[in-house]
Length: 56
Image (cartoon, rainbow, N blue to C red; front, side, top):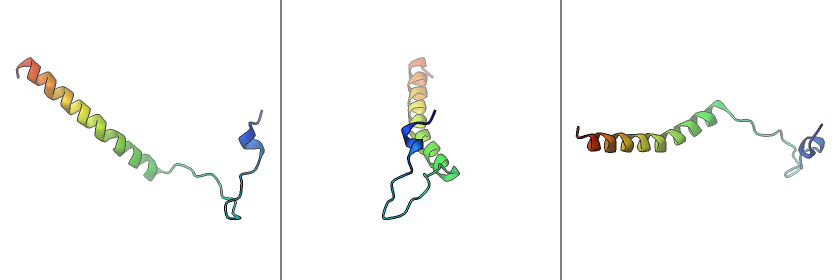
């Protein structure tokens, strides 16, 4: 069963029909780095508070 997006060809942009963009390793690596930064900050803050409350 085909959905509507697969049934019709893509709309041309400036007269050019290009294939869909595919994720690359560089894009995945960039995304992983961006997501890792706030997680690192939260984990560091959590451990700092944990150690402070434990008195160590």
